[in-house]
Image 1: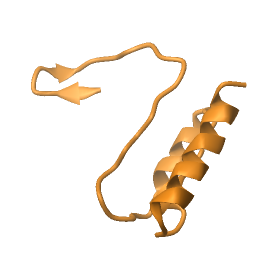
Image 2 (image 1 turned 90 degrees about the vertical axis):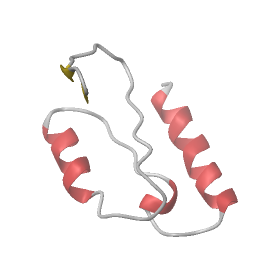
Image 3 (image 1 turned 135 degrees about the horizontal axis):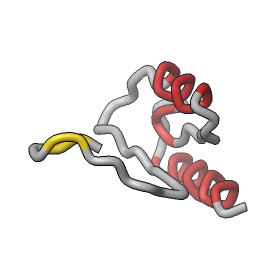
Image 4 (image 1 turned 120 degrees about the vertical axis):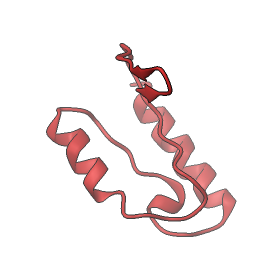
Length: 68
């Protein structure tokens, strides 16, 4: 993690990225995470712009998978 104080490394079992208000090409970040051996789930508008119920459902289903 990088902040005003510099770079800090944190240990975590799960990391969640919430990246802004518009859809962006998430493929490079997903590929880098998977290359590092991390499981990834892309949800909500990162898949395709849609309605809040669709985003909520994809988040719910991803949360179930993360918990397994």
